[in-house]
Image 1 (cartoon, one colour):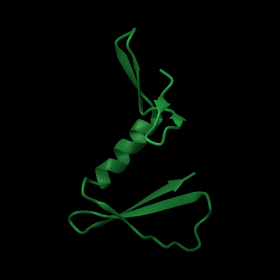
Image 2: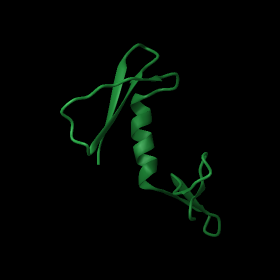
Image 3: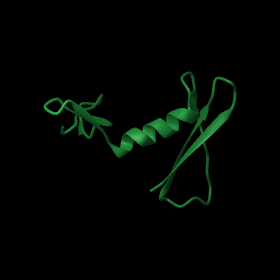
Length: 78
């Protein structure tokens, strides 16, 4: 119920928490963020370089080339 170590060994929240005593699971907000991005970045996509100018520091971005040669840009407005 507290998350656990991630792939890097750091203690972190989990996307889904399982409460075995109640036989239920709880979807955390990060679950929905991952689900949203995965709708646009399918398996086989490759991260590509992205240069941005005149963008506030509070906005983070990443770009992907999809298997169908489409391009996806994901923005995070912190």
